[in-house]
Length: 142
Image 1 (cartoon, rainbow, N blue to C red):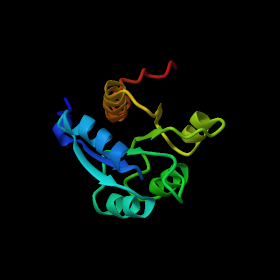
Image 2: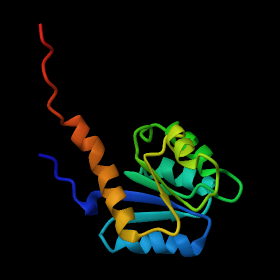
Image 3: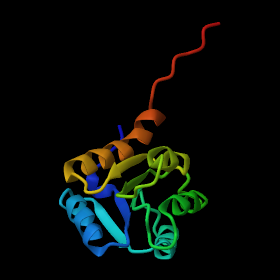
């Protein structure tokens, strides 16, 4: 059985608004996740290369580089292709949820956010790969 506790999960949080970054970090740190924060795409790419996170929470509007573009760039880093990415954004972009998923996002949550909903999405995103990897698959019928 897998021993997957919140203490073992490392999260990378990316937002160019310090207040929002603090709110997200406080909500997740209160539940014993380890959180690293970045306020721009370049810093996030560098940190993701150095310390492979278990999950990423990113804004879409990062003041220059789109979080959607960042997501695609993060997916190219070895070890991050399958890392869950949750978009947390107030972006008023047409079809934003579809575009977030197309870029490789796992979930999308609109700002202002409910910290309980964020925590639930983080928990689900972290557990989902473990559940599907350990699923019992039926044998083919001959």
